[in-house]
Image (cartoon, rainbow over all chains, first blue to last red; front, side, top):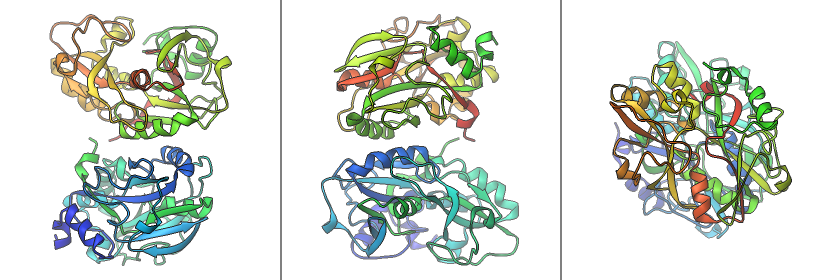
Length: 261
Length: 261
């Protein structure tokens, strides 16, 4: 455990609010981390249906009502400032990366808080399953795939996955452990054979950092909450505000809250 | 197993479309059953958020887009005719019970298909846990409780639960088995002590039929998809169309599709 693992979510969010811009793997061990996508209300209905139809990449942990900037997932916090990195998309084009988005706020913006696989990494580590990007001090590697999502209204596009190289003799454990957390992407969507889901080169992820892959490991792929960003690029809503991939909302929800038997 | 258990979902829905009006416990064993609530689009956004905030009573299995009348949950079917009983609420008041609602249909109506606990009854029976209302050939008893739901927009109101009397030595099994089906209400919300959740008399359910309660059993309560009907009564949307309690949509989805480890 590093110091970052021992920070409370309130302490971690305060650091980010004060300007620390780093990826969040390993922060606040035992607390759920989450993806953000904020959309104008005119697009929010279609996105809610999109999330319901695509629960593996888009498990909703919370939806703020139009204009709301806080919730019980970030007690006393502000969704516009408490994430270590934001992205702004206009008509589907990434136009800015920022430390906060307060000046872009509007009363019609609806924020979706989506589960993140960093949440089950504590359970993997506690069960003796190594997590390469944490060991290597990097962001998780994420890849745009050839796996289509189920469209809803204007929203459509390919699924994004995160990848963890797992020792072959622990792949079954990784499946068993993560399948107990369906609200934070759950069981893997694909094991081995990156080419079969349109990934040409694991060394060049579309988001995050490449990790060193040890011999005897198998690449295991989980649905990723960056999928809404690839969907925004395809679907071109007027405005979308998201977290920067790997720069997550550290919530006040215990990861055990999302564990099923 | 009775004949009703052996009907395919397509066969069961055809009987209902042709006018059979009976409760659906025990129909099409191994297939998921579902609750329906259909609302005008102006209320559908608030209801989607309500469902997300209340996953125990309102687990969404599917959402049809405005005006849609079918989906992959009822292949070749029609949501307006294929349920054995419908209810129509206007401004929160139950105004009609009908066999079909085709003539009430509008292009702005959004249908929500919500998980039903009848789905896990096959798993209970397969595991040797008796289900009293099936043994007694009755509808499941349902009760309005003092448990509040989490409000969203205009929607608020008390949770409705279904009750099954479970032999004391099998309560743990019933919890273990049903907790594997979070999409169809999952683990019980309450075990024993009806008065603690505002139920005065188990012999007089608010919906469905009373069941004979054997000595040595404990009343076990699961969140119920009739909750949206109690919420409609409290929240008074202009129009809401629902199934009649216990008269469910028999879907083409295998119940195992909703099983988690």
